Length: 546
Image 1 (tube, one colour):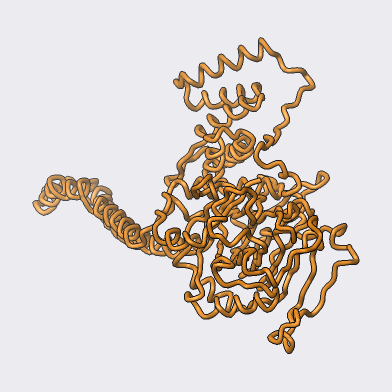
Image 2 (cartoon, rainbow, N blue to C red; image 1 turned 180 degrees about the horizontal axis):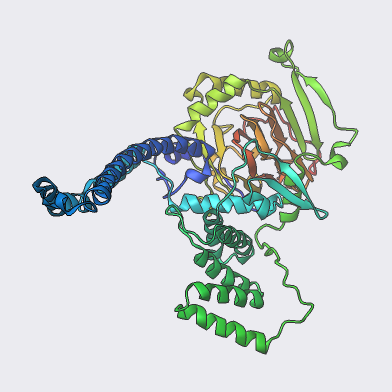
């Protein structure tokens, strides 16, 4: 089991001195929203460019009409008109001067250069454009959503979120506006998978790319990176790597029709034909695409099932010992305004506090955190590093960051009775998830005696208090893997659980995950509370096994 940790004492270093990676837009929906304003500026630039180019083309059309009229009305008329010195002069002038000015005009280059300069100025002023890592991260996010929620690629390409259940397509989420993907969009996703030697995904996305490119007649658009030939090339090799040699041969032969002089493709065809002779496929053989098994995530099937069911686990929630009530914790501050408590699980003990925070408070916390958001990291030995299994950005807020932080600490203390002041608890961590943002199964508490967490000299993380600062349209549940239940995002609610048993040992049933956000902008705030300082609030049990 791994433990991922952010030290209290490293907060300032983390926020101010860790350099940005080459691409981080895909790790936070906040950055994606900010990119909208960047593209609006580019649209304005393009509009100006089109206006100037339209004026230039109108001038060319006017010149064309003038010369054409002369040829149809004057030069094809009586020969006497050619004796007119004015006619002769204008003809000579056009051939010596006007045609040269038109053909060698710099206006087109000037318009293009103005567009390029404007683009570079926007890029410099904004200081952040998506990098290749962002495009690759966004593509991986789509594939992650495809896997975790068993989404059909063909439906995704049409802008829909569907999965196959018992042979039928069922809606997972119905967007208000469907955004279909192009052949080039699918090619780029498939290419990302291809370059990682992930042929399970590359086959599915490149199949869609080829279908769409074929449907467009193989026509290329200037904004595209890929072509039908590119998609056929990558798809053929992907099928070969998955064992479908016959289809790889067929696609390569189609590709050779477009590029007859391609020696590499010709050699591939020879190899495929030889393999089919040496190892002829059985007549009934069907090459089924199988998802690769994982070696690092043993709980993948349970994790994905809990993410898909999104809190609908009747066998868990029909437990008669679970209940809802209005809770005061015998705190004077809650006597007149008790909070709605929903006990979700007894082992591990997990509670959901409804309406823990107001809309305005949640918005203020998001606003304060924005400037400090950095790519979330996990423990890697004694260091910290970004990881594919945690896609988000986070910021750490001290009580001095905003008066609301202190009020939240007081509210948490009233509900739990725990001391949440540093160093007995960590600063408030605010997290914004990215495209397909998730955090795969992990423990909040340290599972190794050498964990850097113990350098704080305040013991292990005894409890977690997680606040949902936003709602999402689909996905984003918190899944408790071994306890076999998940909790959907409940806006403004807070989730609380004990990480440790009363004997100080870690509770293995608290293994949990943040499911990928399918649609929506997920914000949460985490308060991790440590053992020391809670001696009289959560006493040890006489039973050493408890």
